[in-house]
Length: 493
Image 1 (spheres, rainbow, N blue to C red):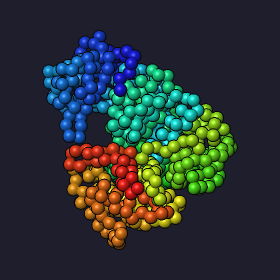
Image 2: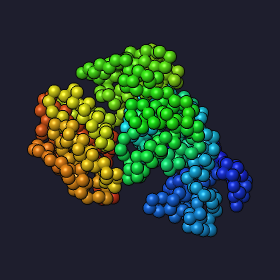
Image 3: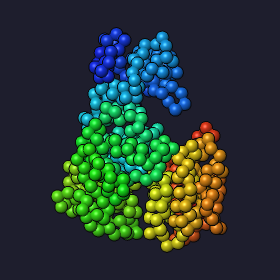
Image 4: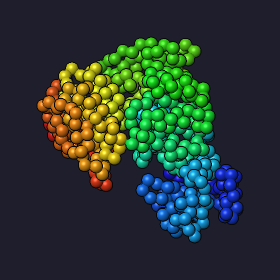
């Protein structure tokens, strides 16, 4: 996303920022920056990063032909881009992030920027905060897994946390439009890959940590450290941390910035609930915060995990100066994020919900929540993604069969893997009793699940949530659980 105002940065300034000499004309200026050679326009600086499959420097010639004035890359990239104007650095990602932030004049510091991290809940917390700010009359921006919103304009997101050049460009666009807040999801991948270098948040929030992404991080300790690195003076001023998990409690005790504790039921936490009353339409609650403040309100969202999300939203909103009475009035209006316990209504006589749950902990939480308002059976459909953390597959399979009334195993995004092998990993040590079943084809699995539903039942379609495609053997085919499920339900009428 390109900002509208004119921006520029010279080789001389880049030299000062990076603290090194650059063998290019010091007066040479760049008016944009990008790591995507297909998006280069005249006057850009092209960022050539080392990648998992190929080095970005292989695309440097195309970037120059499209108008890039120079390349930022590492020693390996410099050899590949031999003969082209190159700024050679030891770490291209750090250099690219710093240059991007300075080119766009550090736009995140022009707004009250808020970063949310954690295994589960990032999207919901960010979405609810964005909605609350909008309802309170504060034009805001949102960057996350599902979408990027600039006030009321929306575009689909390519990844949870964009590359540094894209992130700073989006933030600059928000700053140009005088938005008051930026709320964004911060992934552990983004921290490890140093996309947030040069960024700074007024506040950061932590939801929880449970097994996920171990194909990338290799251990829970590495995963925790990636999340914890956000909670430092380099990246933020204040922290809000849910302490109901072992990792949350540890993060709170080790946090390098002033931190506020949150808990669902620990009265020693700065923010905690004093009452929780599930209803047929959601949950009523009262919460006590720092200084003894008491807020009574309700939410249409179900489940204890959503109450954890709401408490974090409430604490941050109050810190941002939203009147507690306004918060209480706004909360009943807030809707969950797309693909998060999203109801599909087509006149059927049972409840049908689509959710993004794709970790063992999230699967258990969502099914447990559905059980609280289901008078019949909970019928749950789930798969696991290919080319991702395989160690969680049996854990997710166990969660599905132990928590649901009927468990249906199917494909998620198999990517390059054989979907049958993924399903074997999920079910190898499980005993499936009819009508629970393994059905490789996802649409067929949804049709079978619907055929089992009776009045009072709840159908949960888990794993893909808001996604509108299915990745199979290098191709992405159109597949949106919400649309496919709606079509099947319509055929019942």
